[in-house]
Image (cartoon, rainbow, N blue to C red; front, side, top):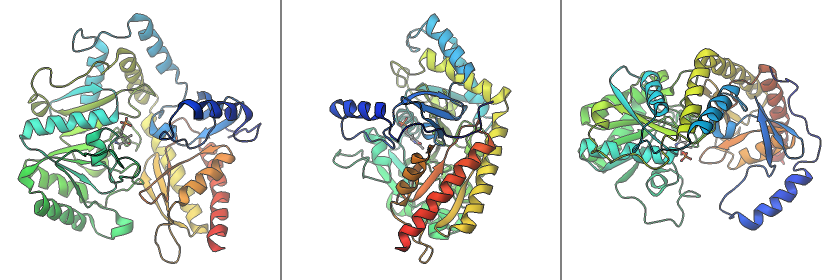
Length: 444
Ligand SMILES: *Cc1c(COP(=O)(O)O)cnc(C)c1O
């Protein structure tokens, strides 16, 4: 087990070596690439990240839910190292190898539904979403792509068009992809609608402004990630699924952030009793190596002509070896249970904080995917931009917290599944103090 003593800071933050690296970076890396904290990381172990100055941080973000089975996982290291020695590349579309097939087998087994499935492997979440749209368009012979408000789907031309926020993802990058339509979502804290009401609103919008028969795919995140861990109201997703089935629309679950055990199930769709036609995974799929997947109904995937999907690096052998180790680790070390344990600890702790801090408008999430939304206690409206202040205060105490939300007023927690309860409690006590400071600031 890892030391449960939490963070250990031995220099000012950032330390002198990080400051020097940051100066070098500023010379050669563009302004467009941001940072949350200008500390330069040297190595990771379990729930901790160590910077170049020897400071130890508690990582409550896992690089946006990527290193879910922990930093420095020995099974991933072993599998990837062995594969590096054996062969690093053949291009699966030219000369195949077993690792790709094994990952596809795992995905068929672990994604929702027991229908016949097949999988394509690519390099990034954005590329996987693009691939899913290609499959849906080919299969339906339709063009329309419907996405939901507060969605985030990526940074390529098509996927940036699919995002809710044009700032920063799309500003100045037009022309944007055609045939993308943004429909209202279910956001219980803001809209107060039941799942049935919110679904009726989404469906009415699509039928009036797009026409169901023009829609190839409805793409949704079961729990919206960048949008602020928005959990849709009960019954929302099943109602959308029933309507999509009747209308011949392909349901694509973007489980890039919510999948691979993050919510305590393999895929978050399971919590909502839906079986999407296509499921997209990426972030935590290969333990930090770049790999993404589209898993779908065999008849949909097989509607695409030979050579129509794939790419040079897609399903790289080293990334596949790491992904196999991730699947095996989650199974053999019962990490879904650990994800649920972390969810309970976080949710209980955050609900305790909410009693003392009226700026916490809501605690929400499932499993190890939890968030708090910061709202004005008097008006209930978002405290725009407040999340940054909290994450900066936590970082100065050695806790890495990620922000989210269209109004930048959500703190999201994505600790990895090896994080002991005691370390989470420690992180929450630091958050406690940061919230008091925020409350003092907003009062003055
Ligand atoms: C991160 C993310 C993406 C984009 O993935 P990239 O690998 O950055 O292209 C898409 N959808 C969701 C829900 C994500 O969290």
